[in-house]
Image 1 (cartoon, rainbow, N blue to C red):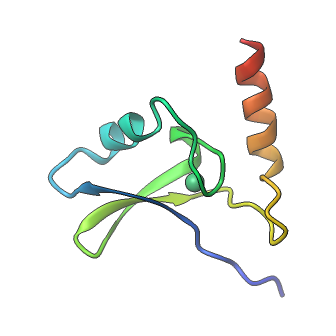
Image 2: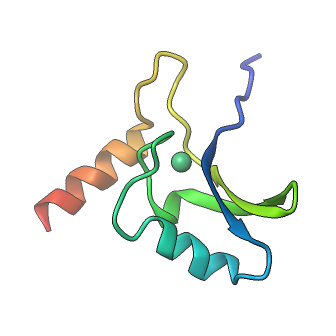
Length: 79
Ligand SMILES: [Zn+2]
């Protein structure tokens, strides 16, 4: 059975903030350093008193980006 690795973006948000808006702001100008995704590839979770963005499509154990993210970024470039 495959072991699931939990990946999260290191940036955290205040729990007072609206998590959806916080996520949008977080990935407004850059992709996630962990998984290469943006707002649509993360789930906000409250952890240790802050919001964290959990990567929904983490890279594989060799560090290769998830195929969905590769495809998404390719489409973004072509826009
Ligand atoms: Zn991520």
